[in-house]
Image (cartoon, rainbow, N blue to C red; front, side, top):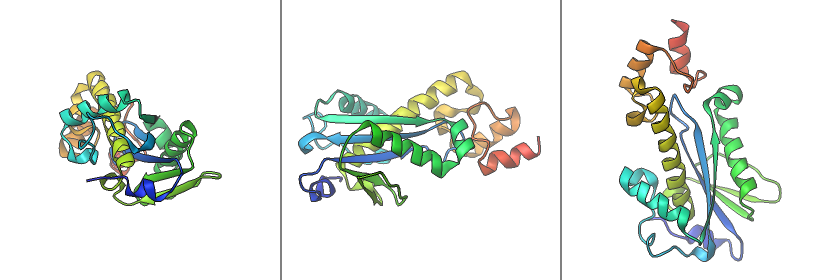
Length: 204
């Protein structure tokens, strides 16, 4: 279970955890979230419930999300990078843009970021933490914010384009999703720079 060991290792420094959702899907945005837990105190309703978002059920994530955004001890920020921007500047730059936006929204001395990707911010400490959402409460909390926010966006996209089944695969390249793209063609939310879309588009 995640804990505050990484955060407390930076003595007397404000530490923000950052995570993202949506790097791999063929459609929809990347969502980056940042979270600062003041004095490392979580409300009673969150004690023992924070974990890597991928390990939680949809209903559990939704419930925890609402508790996070209403917890007075938690400061958070969310950045949404749409598919058009991803196509224009590339996945790596889109990720960096999202992380940089979150950093600009929450002033801190240290930012611990899930994964192994590197980013620099002036006069800030930025530490990459592999499997950080399984180690750090702050990163795990950010992972829930990012995942739920993105899933809600994909549900709205599904309402607009139900033929693709976005409410089931949230944009990932499942067999059903690929078959839907072949049948209906891509929609305005698809990432045309991604290989499966480029390949399909070349036969259009």
